[in-house]
Amino acid sequence: MTSRTATTFAPPVMEARRWLEGVTFPPERPLLNVSQAAPVDPPPPELRAAMAEALNDPATHLYGPVLGHPELRAALAETFTAGYGGTVAAENVAITAGCNQAFAAVVAANCTEGDEVLLPVPWYFNHKMWLDMSGVRAVPLGTGADLVPDAEAARALVTPRTRAIALVSPNNPGGVEYPAATLAAFRDLARETGLRLIVDETYRDFDSRDGAPHDLLAGGVDETLVQLYSFSKAYRLTGHRVGAIVADTRLLAEAEKFLDTVAICAPQLGQLAALHGLRHLGPWVAGERTEILTRRAAIEAQMPVLEARGWRLMGVGAYFAYLAHPFDIASDALARDLVREAGVLLLPGTMFRPEGDPAGAREVRIAFANVDADQIATLFARLAAFERPLASPPDSH
Image (cartoon, rainbow, N blue to C red; front, side):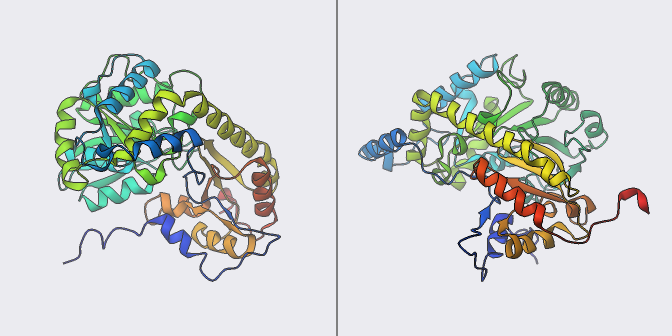
């Protein structure tokens, strides 16, 4: 018998890191690592000081409530209420050990063997991995040239085994920010068909739009909508594993069984750090957003350099730029060659699409959270200088 993990692909970021083994990078061309969407800088000094103080509290080192620190649940409920309108209560919030665990808990609470979940492609690979390991079929939902999914196209994929639609906005890997009308159409579809609409908003703090990006919570929390969130990106807490689920209480009661079994509770220190962040670091997060938007603008400003070489920008936003490359070589091979020949580590589109999908062979993802505007210029110069035989135009056959 083959286990589900044995039939699930290896973690893509870890696989990409292995491409660095045995490769040396000269001082004049250091590695540009744009493979992972995680801040590498530590939390700001004020937050680190608050965390150091929290270590002196004996409760920090004990198990906490499975659904999270009560004050953090209440604070996030207030944040979502203020940010989206409608009303979110503390009892509608569960704190998890990272947003990936939030997704896993929601799937466990909604699905059983042989069920289906619709995922737009290119998809976030950890969502696909968890569905595979859960015995749940990930149904690819195509997104077209703008990488924005269509609710009517999704409707055609719904079967009696469909349990949920999972969206990520701002999107990973595509970077695109789903229009409010798109999200509303998916909510309506989910209501009509009795599905859960899971909206992963890990990168909500870096959305370029001012104000609420959608009105899904305008009527309060219902049985359709599930929102996922991560404190990791906003407060640089990736190593402390703090995420959240916002959903109706009956779903959270089921998710609690999963969370209690897997981790018992999210790390207490990370929860206290997240609480401090929500209460005190709003202006600092706003500054982080401004910097990310500056880097996004730098990507857009540099694109003519690559467009002249046949590259195409498919989507950009939050931490990501998603590009189509012009070469007659599959993106997984291209990514390996870029490490050795250009000192660039990025992820190929083959990691974000179903096996055998030809679109993935022409796409790459750049995660730009850890490269500033000058480094982005260097990155684009290296990509523009990279040469391979060009692929034939699609209409030449």
